[in-house]
Image 1 (cartoon, rainbow, N blue to C red):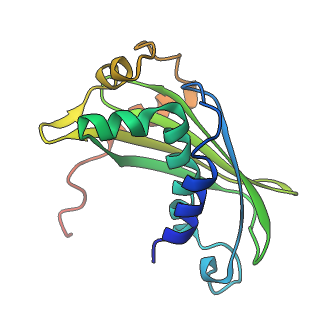
Image 2 (image 1 turned 45 degrees about the vertical axis):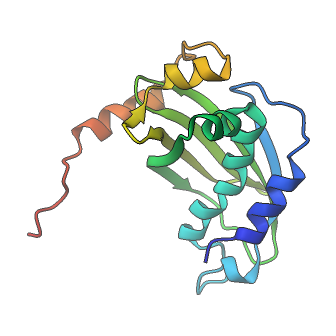
Length: 178
């Protein structure tokens, strides 16, 4: 089940937080609860993806993106991701989540997020998001104009552009059932 209570808590907690610059880092703190666990008593990999919403959406609120989405009746959707897992997050362990927009291209916004425990970075994700309207994908330059921010992206890191290129080679639709 989606963590609606935790999500609401994060939105309330950061509703009056200082505005965040477009590519500045949003930091939040969380705990791995029993309902987040897999059979090995560690943070479930699927739950990890859900918990990243608890950092990404408040970050979007602090940057002014959520206000623009509401005004324009636009939505936001995850259009792809790649995740690297390196350390376990155990039951009841506290972790810090760091979330920041790192740039955009002509269709998508790219956000990186990491979960950090006392042992270091536990996992890291690159999220490709699309802003949507009833007409389809809204180009990021339109979104940034509406936010009053610069429309030119900072240079995307090489590892991000390599992932974008690799995704462009991936067949769609996937396997034909064979």
